[in-house]
Image (cartoon, rainbow, N blue to C red; front, top):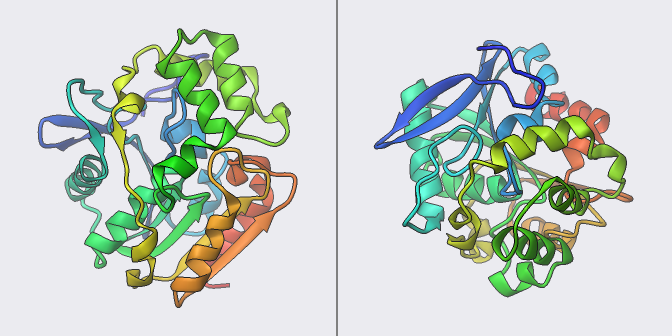
Length: 276
């Protein structure tokens, strides 16, 4: 991988998914752990998960950070809807291209929702599902009533986003704004400048809340009690429907458990991956 400059995430490799390029970063060797990021402004897999890579590698696994279509350095097509099917088919094609036949799947927000659909459609692929505040389990109206979602839509879809606007949106993702560093802001702004508004304005991700009982793999979840993007009560949907399921709820925590409580999340992740 090439070295990153002061304001951009690092560049890695490209996997083809039909006509689209899917960018990914790969660290370490061993059984694959695939990370899928959320749909926040200027999101990339690196900006979501850079604090969680080392624990995966040190536990004897390969960390693969995927930029989903419309995000990071992956293709950002216009003139189409960003549907569950589009995300799932391009991620699956990229994993096939990379040569990953089975993995542990780690997903935050939108990435959690796409992970759910991948596990439903391709149970042979997903050994275990690890999610932080997963999306796609509530109806659209529930999400759009959340204060963080409303703020993101008003800033990105309805306005012009500058750095101050981006910082405002990013701060709604966390309980403590100290986590929105200048470095993170610049990483995300670099990507945001290349991102068409259709990525969010034409996103169509219906609820899979009624299908959670179909999940065959073990499910591990994390949620912040003060999440402004996805209601933490969603954890009960999994606990009530999925036979093999564990959830940890953190107080004084927003949408990004893996950032705000990185040390505790990484310890839990290590234990999940190693069976400790």
